[in-house]
Image 1 (spheres, one colour):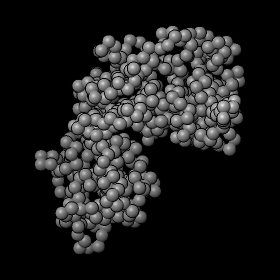
Image 2 (tube, one colour):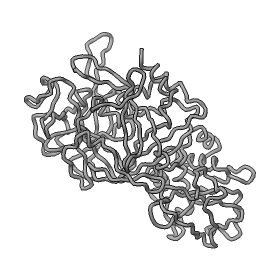
Image 3 (tube, rainbow, N blue to C red):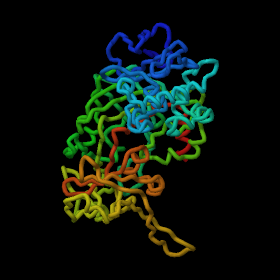
Image 4 (cartoon, rainbow, N blue to C red):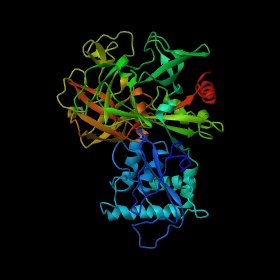
Length: 520
């Protein structure tokens, strides 16, 4: 049992030797889920899947992340999952990546017991590739990790070269960590440089925001703080919020009632389950996991620790920040929040004007389509004067982002189009139609359309907050709820919200650079 997450079987850690059939037993000390089991393979190890007399040409270590229940099968394929987790993926994401590599086979299954010869052949090929990179009869832990990640990156085993392995060695390593230990103290993560409108007719004030996380009374608490007059202080109220609430899809594919932002952002009730924190989302009823990694950010761009899905995503592509790197020895803890099923969230945006009354299906003096529902003014898309009966009626209708920040249209042949304006040789601007991706019907609810937007479209459509999660792996959706068309997000079960956090305070190098980049 790798208790210190260094990928080495150290003296003093729980250990045993397998029997002639590869069976083993270790004491269950409780709360082992998410921790790492290691198996050291040497020249004395017998491989029952190979011809008699076969000897491993080099020693190496295999791994398996302990699951909640059942026997733990440690193999070259489970080691692929562990290596992928060390690239910063959640356990679910890593498992999905390796499953795809194997053509749909579960990498944690016992392929020997089920006589799955095709999967066995792949496992043997993985071992043969690993041992080809041995030095002095040993494949060290770093080479194992880099070679396995090169295999997944290339989508092939045989073609991986030493150059591919070396390319992986330049990337940060996300070592496993016990979530409960990490959150025994507070962690600090950069959030954004966000605007606040006290009056929508005036220019907004802006402030730097950070998130301070801790576990208090069995709850994962995230406190938002603003930087004011040279000091961090708690944000009072919801002045930086861009939503007043949300609707979420429940496990039975029905819609929730109105979930106010105070509930949506409420602390998460958690229980310790090994290296993870687990709980159930109160709004959707979907179970979630919170995993942690520890990453050495030495030499990595400062933008690594800036959220992709923030109000100011331009910071992620700021050239000044991209060209600066973290100092040697900079360590961060990386939080990975994932859910056991897809999440669909329909945001109810804060209305961007002083007059939020709805008149004739519009608000802001007729500028924005909206309805008055659940006690709030709710921005919608499509034709706000129409009561829709099927989301398919969205096809051919102009769909606008929050406050008209962008415009797109779905075509009957499954395409997503968006629009721009182009002026040639000083002439009048002409409306141009671009292909932005494709759409399909969501399998669990036929009144939800999932949009697969291409990277060019996401970039061209700008920094509207509705698009921010899409740049981080979520998908844009068009949904029908209570007769109205709404834009929202699908967070697939393989999605993980990744946050970079620091102990003792926000990393000063990062914060100073962000200040210099955005403050005149």
